[in-house]
Amino acid sequence: MPQGEGLYYGVFDTTMPDLNLRNPRVVQYRQDSMRFWMNKGVDGFRLDAVTMLIEDGKASYFNNPANAGIVMQLRQTMDAYDNRYLICEASEGRELYLDACSAFAYGVQQPLIDGIKKGVVAPEVITFLQDPKRDLAPLALQSHDSYVGDRLINQFGVNGAANADF
Image 1 (spheres, helix red, strand yellow):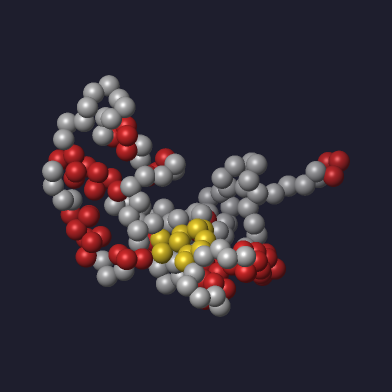
Image 2 (cartoon, rainbow, N blue to C red):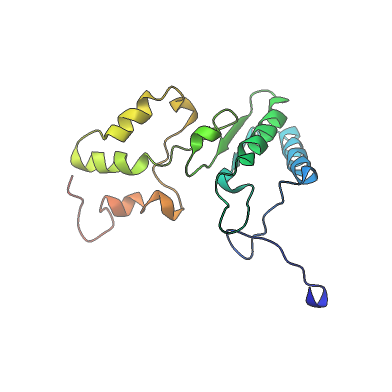
């Protein structure tokens, strides 16, 4: 560490250091922060990128088995308060987190959009609607994240070269 400069790990960006959630004191800090805000009247939280809470380097940073346990600890913190809501962004593997939070139903949006364009109901949408835990997985049609797909306004041709053919 030359001249007092430190190093940190940031999987998303070099300007976004990741918290070391393997350290119980860091998890306790998150829980204390949640309590502070709930004591101020906050009704709920959105946990971003729960699939990447614990990382094992650049080659292994997705859906670590410890992630669901951390989310459950945060859920238990919220359970000490009445009527609070926790939602998680889980790009894949949402079923790993549904015992602790609602998790956006990414992965269904593109078959739904394609079905609307074609005038049919895609099999993936039917499967989603038949899932007994669907009420814990709100359907998200769009996000700022590229893995969700192009903006709806572009997919339906509203602001583009031509109107959509549907």
